[in-house]
Amino acid sequence: QWQTLTDPEDPRRSRELAKLQSTHQLGADAQSAALWADPGRLQALQGLLQLGFEEALARAALQQSDFDAEQAAELLLLSGAGGGPEEALLQTTDAATSVDTTRATRWAGRRRQALENGYPVEGCDACAAGDIAADEDVALALKIQLEEEGQGSSMFGQGFAASSCSLGPSGVDLADEDMSAALAAQLEEEERAGGNDAERAALLAQQFEEYEGQMKREDAENWHGKGDLMESNFARENLSLDTMDKTTCYSIGHGQITEKSFFELLQLNSVRVLYDFRASDHRGDVHAPCQHFSVRALKSACRARGLAYKHIALGRESAYGILKHVQSDEAKHAMVELLWHAKRSRACFMGFDQDWQLDSRQVVAEELAQRGHKVLHIDSTGGTEEHEQGRKMPDFIVQEEARLRKLEKMRQAGELKRPEKSSVDRSSEA
Image 1 (cartoon, rainbow, N blue to C red):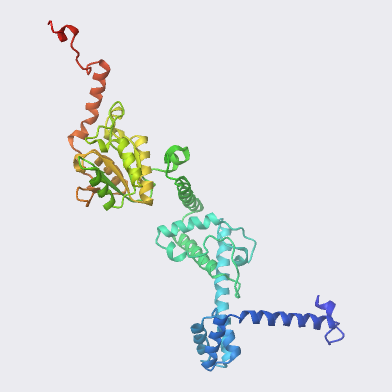
Image 2 (tube, one colour; image 1 turned 135 degrees about the vertical axis):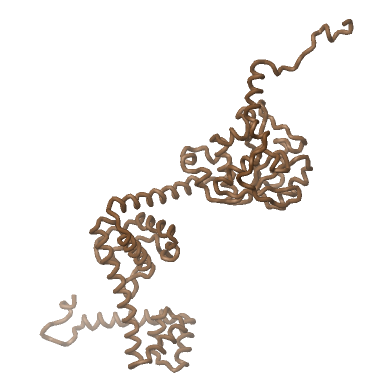
């Protein structure tokens, strides 16, 4: 293009060249005017001028320090240590550029070496100075391994998941540079540890599997809080007591206290979700000692107070007691729902007796505690007591399954029918 505007035999500028240069200068002036139109930048420039620095050097220092007056003043003071101020300032800028370029070149060499060994590395085309496809999943898998080793949080910062970078004056993005340094350190550590390509491929496959499982669990937990969390096959395959995030649950027993006292205990512990795990008989009825603790009355009272309520009869007669029932999928799904609510608000599960050591809800608490979750039992004063893991179960819980099976056989044989008197026995003549 420049050859069309100039004549090689005539060194003078042509009209087209003069016009193009003039337009370029006007555009540069307009850009500079817009750059310094901000009052804060002008105030920072005036502060440097009052300190005795030249205007051109002050503008250059402010642009280099992202318009930070303190950093610009420090840069100007350092530039005056040796040689002319302008020359030293340019040397400082060139030194920072050379450091960034050297680190980027070293990482590019590391990328080429890793690709020659058949190990995929994530990055961007501009940073690698070649046509290398970005692989975001590989970088995320390496991040998981670094976090397990206690290094991921310090090495991976902002801009980790970006598959392309925006280049600065030196041609290297700082966030991409940190990511590249972390991946280079990971490759160097694996080289020092040794191992063949098969072991590395197995390790990478394991990291991918962990990352994929984490993403699936997050998708499975996408629930509105109504109905059944474990209704879909996808949720049943990816959510369990072991994979749920460790959280804290509460437990309470109503005993024979008043309805007002019961809800005051819940309010003292800021409970917003109540799961009723009380067992039912063979007809599906819950025998509460007080009418206000029946399932229907309790559901209505919770709705009036803005509490979420759900009844799931764990340990009912048809399931042969709590110890047998808690190992079923129904009970495990109910506890997963409880943990889902506990992760987002205060959730509590309910039993019959106020003393948790005399109530069957201690079996649910033991199951949750064995999976790493924390259970706090609410006492009659509103205080809490952490569940004692590994405690021996009382006899009425251990022998419950055998007792219920015996009752079922007697009921099927007709031995539990209520005795009826004959009409002769009821007559007045007899």
